[in-house]
Amino acid sequence: MSTPTVENVVIIGTGCAGLTAAIYTGRANLNPLVLEGPLPGGQLTTTSEVENFPGFPHGIDGFQLMQNLREQATRFGTRFEQALVTSVDFTSMPRKLITAEKVILAKSVIIATGASPRMTGIPGEKELYGGKGVTTCATCDGAFYRKMEVAVIGGGDSAAEEALFLTRFASKVYLVHRRDTLRASKIMSDRATSHEKIQCVWDSVPVAVEGVEQNAVSGLRVRNLKTNTESVLPVRGVFVAIGHVPNTAPFTPPLDVDANGYFKPLHGSHIQTKIAGVYVAGDCADHVYRQAITAAGMGCAAAIEAERWLAEHGG
Ligand code: NAP
Image (cartoon, rainbow, N blue to C red; front, side, top):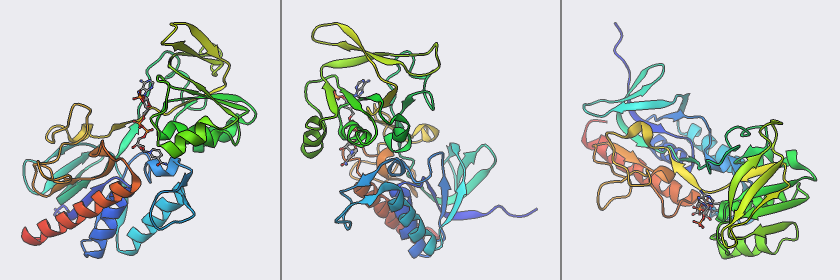
């Protein structure tokens, strides 16, 4: 019987954090294995222009940035495998990562599973999601709404960015937010609120996506929280941009998470978990900054820690 392979380091996730960890562990000759989940390249692949990643004075397309990181990781010997980890066993060495098909063994693990879009849960949203008018990705689906009216739900940078992107196609974009000012950064807020095609629908929450009977979005019912009145926005597309939920479930237990589901690293560290040789990086562990560059920084730190740990414990 052949002895199962024990990997030096397995990195779970192919966003900025995971691929940066792969570049560093690859350059350290650790021959990293990266497990690729359902959204290869992570959230940036669904973004249009990335304007704030250092080193790109004129911005860079999100998909292209992730392609570049992947190419760089591959250059240093990173191997990629499509696998969805459903649970883990960290009680002994090597660490066990359990997928539907097999168990992967690793001396050290870097979890960089990111976060998934949060949904509102209103009636009609689930029924009309994916190809029927409800989506979480303007970059992916915006072009389907040429000369139509659409709504974006949310008030953060993502919502402002989605709304601005949609102005390229849509005849009008309603930006539905439950407050009377956006939470987005000033530059994004100013751009969105001053755009002639964007109409802000302040102090309003979505109540239902209409059109379930026709199997296509026919409107978004919203309620004004100040007047307690309801109205229907005549839109064909609804873009949900209300933040993200960290992808930490397969690892809990044994790892600890906070009230919002984000990994809680050891006190005094932002990447080290209570399990020796197991690290977390990026949006699954960061509810404060949540930027591509901070995720990359955490991936780098986790890789350096894994390298040191392996050197001490027989890598
Ligand atoms: P976010 O900053 O957490 O904003 C989420 C928005 O959705 C908030 O306005 C929130 O309202 C609203 N919301 C949450 N739950 C809701 C619900 N159930 N119904 C209605 N509205 C709801 O999330 P984000 O915009 O995805 O941004 C996440 C992080 O990525 C941030 O740090 C952001 O700066 C960053 N980001 C940066 C860029 C960029 O720099 N270009 C682009 C995208 C994202 P409240 O305001 O009332 O809480």
